[in-house]
Image (cartoon, rainbow, N blue to C red; front, side, top):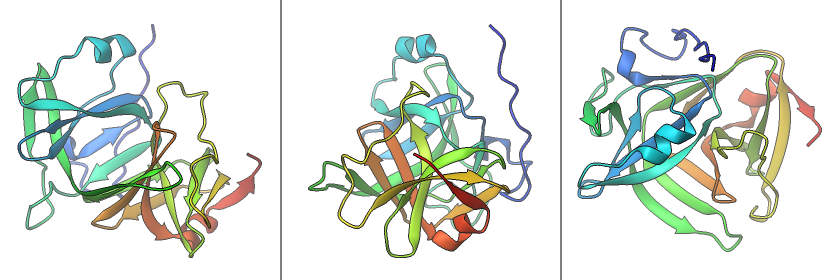
Length: 214
């Protein structure tokens, strides 16, 4: 099996020397949550489905999520609670290196079946020109861009859990799309498998994208 070639960090997102702050590539990733503190740690590097199935969280930790990363690369400017941007906190868990990148502040199950979370994180994403992605349009001039998706890359989100006024739009990027997620982030989970985060201005997306058929 040929290993995927990962992209090089892009300085438009953040400091390329803070290597633990980056996630590179669109492969399968997973996160752990420390039960006592609600700290969320992301595994450094992509994993295979077999590696994920075999991984046992250490005592006091549980799986937070697992899915295909949707951005070509992402950067976390700091760990939650830090006073300034800088290298994130790291931990060796279950024989793997993890970065502390998020902490949930709130959780709500919506009438549509979607889940909405408020998360403390300092997150920026880059989606390369030429790609086609789904964005969640809130209908108020803001959107959420895709964070993670189904472990099966052929499976796509559906409209079945959209709140009134929301719309899933498929767009083709004609230039690189860079998004800087505000803190706290608004994270929406659809179909129990697809995460979108924002809000960011719809103008940021429309400036570099054209509509594509869903």
